[in-house]
Length: 145
Image (cartoon, rainbow, N blue to C red; front, side, top):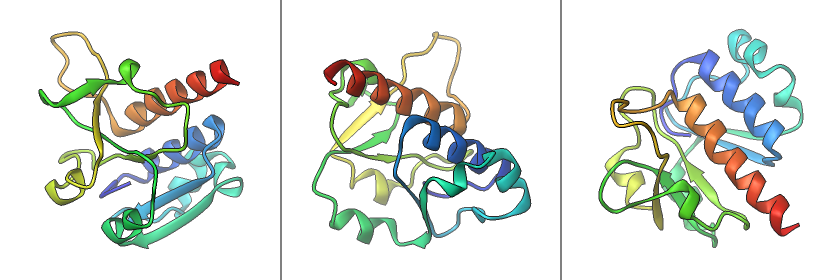
């Protein structure tokens, strides 16, 4: 996660990630505190089943990741989520509530992914986007069992 500032959103992401079977959640510099009271309340125990790393240099962290790096991003070079092969370990990149991902981190992605939405909707809340993406990945993993 890059720049997620709202503790409620972060806690919801923690809870969602735990429910989707994610093992590790990595928070870049500038994210709100994962263990703040509001994040803990919204996380509903998810904090205790995930490995959570805070204040991480995300670009450096990704340098050691060998699998696909997927970034949620709008644009002509983005594939829809449902066209992506997610039945493998991937690193997901999700950006801040207002700005999305930084250009530097977006360049680290091996693939840009967008969630198909109705024409009149610009974007989703970051916690909602995380839920859609992680549970599509979980669905694909279960299908390939």
